[in-house]
Amino acid sequence: MGTDPAKQQEPAMKKKAKGDPKTGQEEESHTCCGCRFPLLVALLQLVLGISITVLGFIMAGISSSLLVRDTPYWAGIIVCVVALVGTVMLCVSYQPEEKTCFQFAIKLMYFLLSTLSLITCVLAVAFVAHHYSQITQFTCDAVLDSCQCKLDTSDPLSRTFVYQDVADCTSVTSTFNLYLLLQMVLNLITAIVCLLACFVMWKHRYQVFFVGVRLHSLTGTEIQQQKV
Image (cartoon, rainbow, N blue to C red; front, side, top):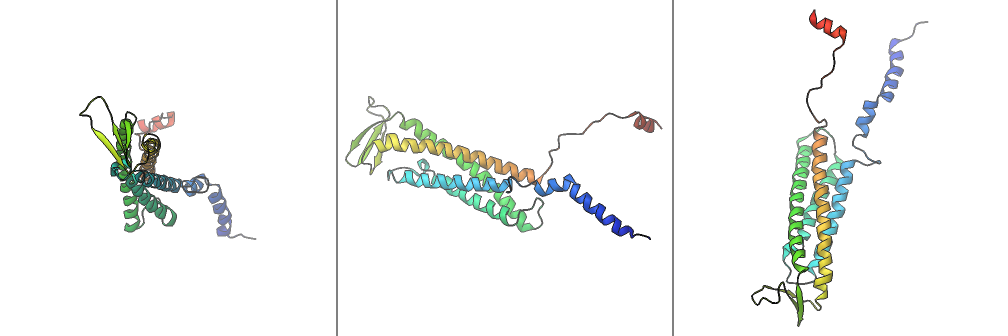
């Protein structure tokens, strides 16, 4: 009794599909512990951005005379926007290869905003580190509802830094100093995460690293074929 060759091929094709490691790798190439790895990066950006923003507003509440550059909540807001764009892109319509112009525009926007966040966080680290280096050398005195600090009390021409609406200089030399240190650490970690996000987006667009031409030894049969 004859058998249908099409029916014989179906189990073989199913078996091949199940046992094909390449297919499994393609399906799991963008997952890590059940989640997409780029999504984990975007969520980490969101957590760090919120932390920087909240800490920046707390720092701004210590004194009304603090400059914007010394309370880098602006860096955290930018990182939060980047994280939201990345989360929406990776949760809703993520695909390794762009299928529509809209999806390509979203990916490009996320890549450019991550680059902007990287630069912003580096600037925030520079500003905060400069203020931190100064505040560790301050000599402060409380005057009414302000705190006046100098770098060199023996120099009459030394610049005086005034922190308004401060009841105690301890909030400047101790609490605010600690917040500056935390901002440096958070912004440095966020800059590294944004750099990682840019790398991940680039790698998912260009899956393979081309490192050159692969050379392999020729067998005796191949040499003979080339001579013929």
